[in-house]
Image 1 (cartoon, helix red, strand yellow):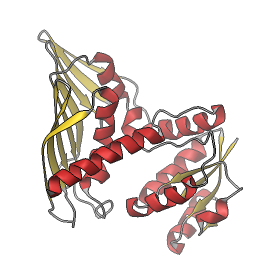
Image 2 (cartoon, one colour):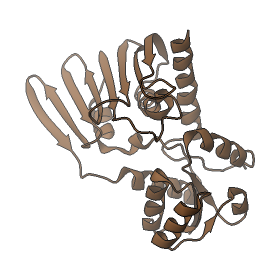
Image 3 (cartoon, helix red, strand yellow):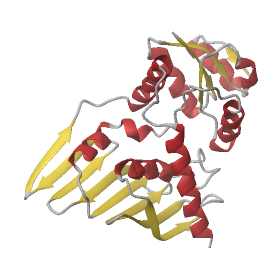
Image 4 (cartoon, one colour):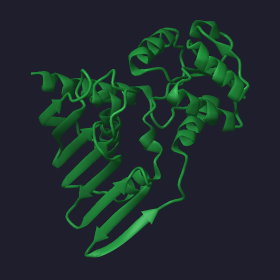
Length: 273
């Protein structure tokens, strides 16, 4: 049984708590939350002990899930990783890797001429303390890196602040080898959309990450492929626990996270020039 703590019990943290409660091989021993009102609510709803300082978790847990705001979780992770030991399992929360629609896309995609990543959502204060590149786009950067072996070349990128002090909209064009990749990212949209559309010499694929389905058109014949809908957060956290138990890498590694983050920073630098 893996002893787990969740650091941060806000909007997303609550979901992590719910999922860990469902994983048989995970024992949620406590939650770390500094907001007293939230802490009381979590303690009541999930019957779990609350601590206010994550440093007190040392020696009491085998794993932590950091679900604090983006501006805070970097510091929390940095301090925890300083104590990193050989064999420590680190998973980055790029949840779309566990989406069945992405799996179907990869299985049917070969040498695309173009690929378009669309990720749109209505504005919310949650997440607006960082650039949309790090809030939303980074998930699609990770998916692109998982699809292509070649390193991307930035052709053009533009960004615009609308409601926050950071870019809320980013449009960018890259080359992954011979593939033209277009990213349309917005957190000030009137709709919620997460799609990947790809075109090869003989096939059109549209992967709907929200509905977890794929539409494929080949030689004028259209088919829709969908697997049984999955709770992808539960899949992600189950993979994390399984990796710890078996001493192996999870599907999304620390190195994957560093690679995507480095490229996200390059995109932001390009916008600022």
